[in-house]
Image (cartoon, rainbow, N blue to C red):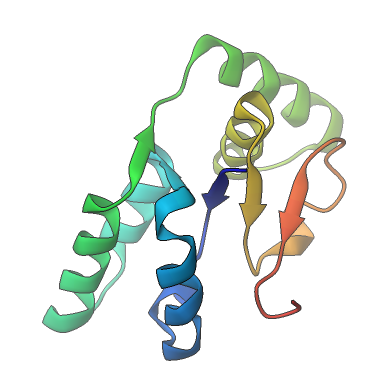
Amino acid sequence: MLFLIIFRPLFLKVDCNLWMLLLMPFITFLVISQIELLCWKADTVKEKRIKDFIADSTIYDITPDVITHCVKIRRNKKAKTPDAIIAATALSHGFTLITNNEKDFKNIKGLKIINPFKV
């Protein structure tokens, strides 16, 4: 099983570091998530952690299949484009989405979600 991870400020919290260490061999990442992470305002230490995390991850680009899924999600759920791309990538590749932002993804058919703070 592979995991698509999208942590917003959650990534910077100390208590999720164990999750990161345990899941690192299985983590994949989106180009859009990479952009979001790199745009955070962070001190030098946190910025290095973010860059190291991205460097250790597999980055997935937006493919034609992801675009097809994304369009369906946007039309049916009125999701924001970044969230639709994230969900479409997970669906397209059969990934489980790890996020603390369940509300933006909960009604997308077929999408598997894990909230690490509820496990």
